[in-house]
Length: 442
Ligand code: SAH
Ligand code: SF4
Ligand code: F3S
Image (cartoon, rainbow, N blue to C red; front, side):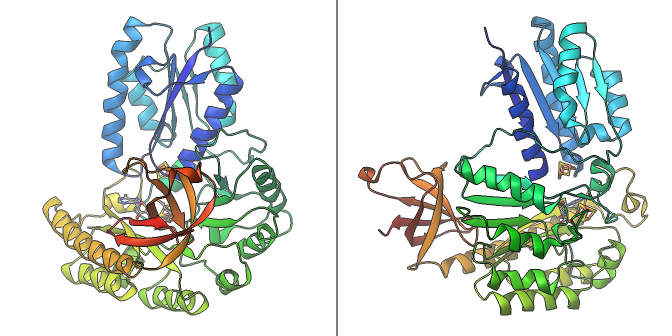
């Protein structure tokens, strides 16, 4: 009888993609996916440490597997991702969660099959964490979450050391893949039916081919020539490194989607400096202006942190005014949470929780109002939508994304059959804050 697995994934798209790779490895070993983690023979928890509540949630779920392990001693529990890259977490697991069978980190996921074999054949626990692996793993065979779109790493790690952020400590030093390897992978994906790729890196703008020295714009131009590929997206861009050459790709590369995620984090120069972001508000606004000049219909999203240590009411109002000036299509908002080992966690001027929450609510109100205003401009117009599958919220409807990454739920006559992976024209009939609704127009 074949064995079953389940993977619980927290955090960003890096983790999502690592989970796709782990699923690929397990299926190659004959494991089959099951929906219910408590019915599986093997569970992997792929963890995130970017915020404190992620921490708490992780240990909570870990605790719930204790009972299962008692009833079914053969059950295998694995922990990977960013949490075990922090030594204190591995200590905590050893001390209080001894029923974990396998621990590995972000730097050695390719080693997982070997660790699993060791665990199964010797019955011994396998704990293997590497702080910083200089080798970029190629030739993994991911099991993709979507048939028609794929996540593709172009860089690993991060060297920016924003003072609030744990990622440079959990993902190691920044490494770029080669243009050739990325292109090769994407050509294979396209041959397998992929229409859209999302290029992943903590800072895609610092991509540099280790052999040829080619930069991110060169990579996009190369990928734009891949026959059969329809859409190219990427995340995340960093305002300190984005180049004019990259921005010019929005006109010269027809496959590049008119959408950018450009985290600002804060609107106050004083706070940006303490965050170690290496740009100021004027520089950020000049990038926004260039993007809109080059690509007038570009949609823009961002990340914002409220309550960074020392943030005054005036600093926060600068963030509000920036949000209103840029008019983002959407934004991810975060309440600052101190991460052990980062410089900002040691700053003495931490902001009281209630002030953080009050600012957070005011920010979200503005962001949602602007998102809705933006989306209302779509009503009555027709857009190309790449269909992802059936809508998750609306029974019988389809869901897909516009070129600008707007989520569209729409209806189509049943006789049109399966629409997955097709690009169709949809007329927008209703706009909400986080999505659009429409009917197929052809
Ligand atoms: N590399 C990307 C994203 C990294 S993590 C970038 O540079 O933008 C995703 C987001 O989490 C960050 O953009 C930031 O807004 C948020 N974040 C990171 N550390 C945080 C912390 N300690 N507290 C609150 N939010 C945080
Ligand atoms: Fe974190 Fe900054 Fe690196 Fe993004 S660029 S992952 S926020 S250190
Ligand atoms: Fe979380 Fe690690 Fe991504 S900390 S956000 S999973 S890089």
